[in-house]
Length: 254
Ligand code: MF3
Ligand code: CO
Image (cartoon, rainbow, N blue to C red):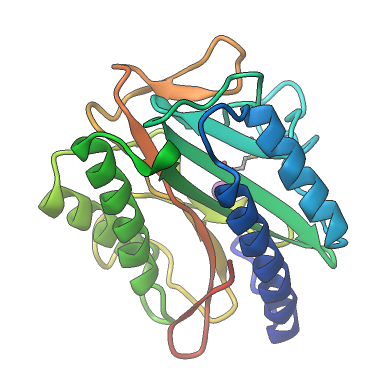
């Protein structure tokens, strides 16, 4: 079942989303050569707590996992797609770094992710991968309105990526409903067919999160059982926003 959030709940989600985007801004400012992903994770934790919110990934057990997630943020470098656990790994100039963060605010949760190049430098393909992934997220968001269908979102993301690149769209992972729980129904696929799937209604809240790869879209688990990486070792980028369907369109909450 897809839950419907009230206008008051969407107001709270917007407050939480504002806090989350401020934390992401601050983390992003601190992304530089030599910093470890664990140091960035601690920064994210401290900032969330200082705002009176609570990390939502820390100790969260996704369905299918056999143990709770051990950190505040997911920190993915280069071929890591999602869910890589912060570590002593030091970021290098030119790394493609994706960071994904969620928090609880007044009983409701929001989720958002960004990708950047460490030091602002990198290969042309890395720059293009980031640009196409971010733009595809906004394409997907633009499909959100009452009366549209779930498949319209995936259709828009897929057609944008395929029109503008030869990049891969990860199939084994997707966006999702969010708000009362970290992951709610439905799966919001990053590919699809126009006019198919559930009808979108005012008050639905989804985390849209295209995960786009430089090469083949197939992924595998990292040795720690958390991180997910490209099978072919190619780069991956990831952008995510929490978005509500409103009376006449959508509202980005993060
Ligand atoms: N934003 C992540 C997702 O939607 C949430 C990660 S939860 C974790 O998949 F427990 F895996 F960190
Ligand atoms: Co998510």
